[in-house]
Length: 306
Image (cartoon, rainbow, N blue to C red; front, side):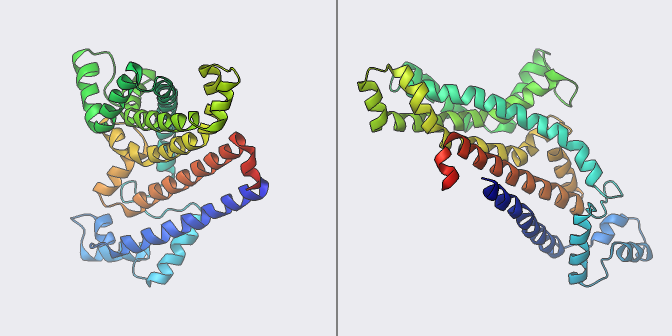
């Protein structure tokens, strides 16, 4: 187990290095002069040249790349034209808000989607199954930004029950969480239904029923345990999606997270800010995958020796 964890953890900086390299090549290939963007529209040519020298943009690309990698290792994400300094402290200030929104969405996604999928499978081809499946299809068809606007219009503008923007307390978390988790609830419910039905048809489930166990006991003691690995996979993948998928929802609700900051960086072509947030997303996604794989070994101990 420790060897497996060490190997997976060692892969994280290698993947992050690959992402940083790809981003470096992309940003250097994008048309436009970064020095001119930092200097502003009213800057003189002399001021632009001074900024180019200050940022090291007049050096060869290989030298810029090496300096960039060394800077990242020391926590220097370069010069941000938005904050006029290293953007890392400003990015880290936004991380708690994004993590709060992500964790609340995971809780709602799991607490609603998992029981809904199990109930749909338990009542297969009966009215609860048809009802849950209809809701699932409807949620899959609704974009999160559209649902967010509907929630704002109804719960905030018309009824005045909830605040429509910002992080001002527990109530301000409700609408962004619902908008972000609605489609994910449907995905988890649909996946859970399919896996549980498949497991219920296997020999061990039929044997348990033949020995006198009722349907509920067979489902809770045997079927769900074997069905958890693909379900955990879906939940883990969607948790990784929440890191990047929260961008639109954060901007819609003026949520002070890194997704909203990413859109700001893109709009003003702040490459170092965008790169810093992207690297953070990648590392977060890799850590989530690591947690999911550890959960595999807890759910099914046989995988520890695989």
